[in-house]
Length: 259
Image (cartoon, rainbow, N blue to C red; front, side, top):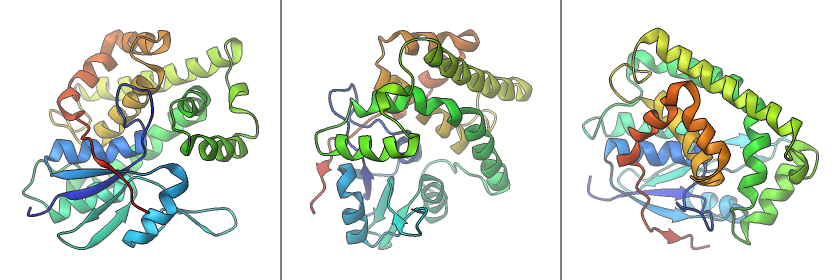
């Protein structure tokens, strides 16, 4: 591969790793596991649309009014002049375009199963995880991203972020929901009697789980009560699970986006 991939990520501030988003971690893990050379470009939230339009990337989603909604992760491949968004599309592109570089993370005979896994994974977790992590995430963003993140998420949740899950019964209920989701994932692995969802090798489903674990660890902090509890769930499975990804957690210095 003559030139490195350009990888667009959202920077955090005052945290152990600059990279924190579970969605961008999916692509960072993909690149690291496959061993594809890349360079990070850090993009603040208000600049995402400008940067993606500049590289010729399409919007990943549409808002309710039909207007384009630009999100990260994104990559630009200078070798093929390809700009691409959305982690699931990116991993499939990299598997196809560079079949001889690193392991295939979505083997052809597991494509539909990966789609089903993502649906089931989100159905189990997403109704609770945002209440715990979104208020914590806003505190870990820089001065350009924080107001944008706060305003858009408060519209989405219909209230102040600080009121989503303050200490007390409401937070405990959402935390119990998160624990139930991870126990569900553990039961899937137990039924397969394997350490990964593809058996003895890492696949994109595993990267999805590891990326959310990174969100918890980076945003809550390694010394936090809740991260300590999570590591102990299911007989310590998730601490052991993430240990298998430690060699793939490198984050390059990168550079800030030029507008």
